Image 1 (cartoon, one colour):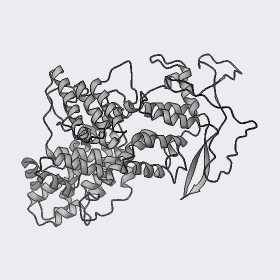
Image 2 (tube, rainbow, N blue to C red):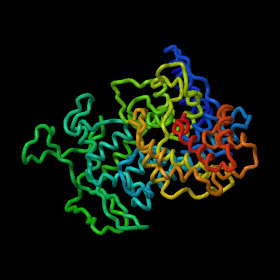
Image 3 (cartoon, rainbow, N blue to C red):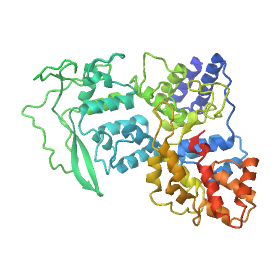
Length: 531
């Protein structure tokens, strides 16, 4: 296996696309070897209905529409799954879904503020398939303003707090938790307090400037001064009144300090008040040095961190957990595969679309969500069920009820009920602990059972799903099938079909009962989870 991995890495570095097609086999071979070692029988391949829903949620951020589902299920092409993956990766919904994913990584849900400019910028990066190292470098250098250019929004959120910036950047882009070294030497890792301050020194001169209003929003501009240092006073448990401390040089994590040239005689910092346009560049930019180091292919943390994060995005758990804590004193769950993915991503010049394609095209990803093993947390012998994110839930509700526009649905859907997105996002607020675990909430159940927004969603309105079912001339069995194919993306089982047909045809006016049947399907765990 080691020789195969090395050979494929060489092919990828030479631009040979055969390596792209074959890498998913490395994933499956590594997993098969681990299953054999543990004497685990993996779950069978999931059926087409499960796959089209699963991969559309993961890549497009929503469930497939009725036409998308039916077309896929009827397709007899043995390569239809691979072709579906390729279509979804080119779909505009993919870029938007990835932008939202990274928005949550970089800002979290509790960090409010206007981020439309950032989401637009991030969506464009994925639409163009811009290499990961390139857009991370742009994110750190962050030229322009937060509204029109987007990128400055990330560093602007820290408002010049260098310690907070270092903590977040290390966690996100290096997969390394150095927060404990902020006040004292890390008790469990090799990081010293001086390592933390050395990293923070790269951002000590970054200043957030109010650039005024544009398009009705406050815009923020990042400037970097040529002077200013962090002062280190030692452990927080041994404070000394009046101690000013010693200036800390910018120092790469687990590396060398940056040598800075002396400032010209008589140098004065430019006045940033009332800044118009872009600020002047500093005499020496620590931030440029950091951006070059952090995104370098030889950086021992950068590629590992994003491989772990992307893998966890599609399997709910990483090779290291939590995903932003690569403990180098503890091996990855699948060290050979983790190393192979890192090497290939570097060889493919940090092409995240390639990495995602190989993951979701693998047989490992396409396993059913049921299996013989008692615990699937570490073995990937079956697909790990995960709850829909609030963003996915909103989109899925709208598509399933006939308000969302699918990729191939020729009929423009009606406008959704007012305030639906805001209330649904709040009710379905993320309840994951970062380790792939999920705990439902009372507020979510109350919203589904009693919330007027859901009742408005399932109420008949011209053009929505209930209306299409009620105005159809098809037999009721066919109409119930359409409901299942739209909401759960599978045909109704005979018993389900029989019971719902009997329920909706009790009286002469089935409107309320069809609405009730739709509400039941939307309330199921089968709809709530990606499986």
